[in-house]
Image (cartoon, rainbow, N blue to C red; front, side, top):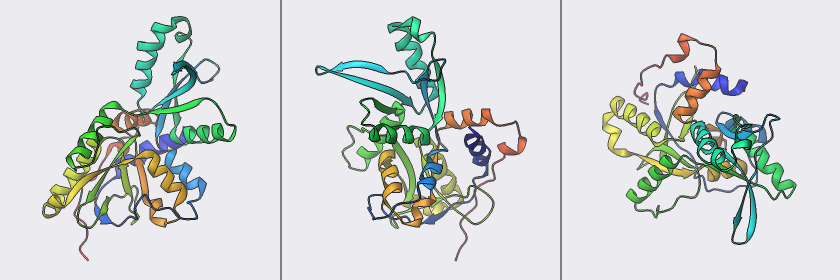
Length: 267
């Protein structure tokens, strides 16, 4: 959990915003980013699952078209994991539910578990559950842009971008000149960043929008593209998850400070 704590301390350092080009996420190339870099990006996002006192995952089985499906659920929202425990498992099997707890992991842990399951031809399905409100927001944005968004079967991410240049807003995550491209798990976070940018550079406001992409597509791009710009992508946890991460860190007044946005430097 040390990485999650470090992330909670970094989050208060975002500031100025400038545009930056990023290759299309669909591009497939022969080489991929180093695996440790991919894992490092996923390590920043907490996920939650249910375990027993021994730390073992809880497998839920159900019938689907005459076949038995065994599934382990992972949640992006701790509240959703708790609701699943309280509203479903405690009703179906109160004796078992009384021995369970919500356990935090990271998206990197989930990623490794899925890969290991594929290697072993595991019959268990490891499912990552999206936040339903964000799925609805994704569908709404896709419909507004003229795309078919009646269903969204993945994990939506929201990316502030420029329309004309087809480039993305970038932010600093620490002191220095390095800038990164934030992919948000909540639409509200992307809207807040765009609002901040519009106040700082109002003449560019009409040239911005929020793009919806799928987490699994981003993960596939990170694994299949060797373009160095892919390393600029940063996955921003939800506000609920950020609060959880910060609860793990020692209390520090400085970690709550957030510099105001400033306009990009003119070349």
